[in-house]
Amino acid sequence: MELVKNLRQSKLVKYVFFALVGSIILAISSKIKIPFYPVPMTMQTLVVLIIGIGYGWKLGLATISLYLLEGIIGLPVFSGTPEKGIGLIYFTGPTMGYLLGFLVAAYISGRFNYDNNLLKNFLKLSFAVSFIYIFGMIWLGNLIGWEKPIFQLGAQPFLLAEVFKILIATFAINQIRKIKKLI
Image 1 (tube, helix red, strand yellow):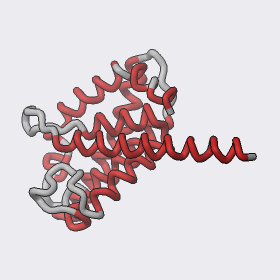
Image 2 (cartoon, one colour; image 1 turned 90 degrees about the horizontal axis):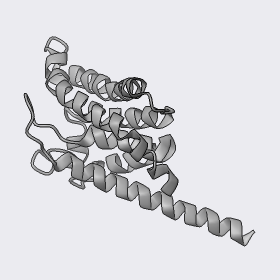
Image 3 (cartoon, one colour; image 1 turned 120 degrees about the horizontal axis):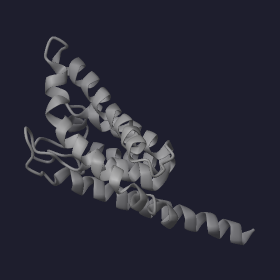
Image 4 (cartoon, one colour; image 1 turned 90 degrees about the vertical axis):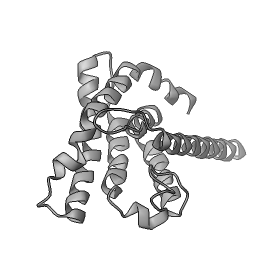
């Protein structure tokens, strides 16, 4: 009985460790701005996919939730923080829909089974990432008004960079899946 209790505790410690590491990497990825046309890109969506694929859907959701909680309580983990504000005020701003979409993308990318078919893997990851933009544009439309060009403001400038990041994840999928063996 004691052995089972110790195993559960050590597994929980391992999960907490991986969730903390994942949230730190996601926070760092939000701060790295790579010059890209027409807008600079961060690596957040790539890291969200890596967390989903590598951690699986349960630990992936826990990790993204931890990251969001860190930002909501005021840690400067989001892109644009602390320069544009912190905490709940920043979270409920224009990017909230995208941030909530991270949860769905991590869940979906963590649920899929991947094989060596690059096209199928690319399409699966594209589907997962699309929820970041869907949630983002819905929130943005509600926030600034639907009469504005929501797609042109909330998705179009980022799509070229997004295809690039999805390609990186697609080609690295077998390496990313090795993370699961550590967990």
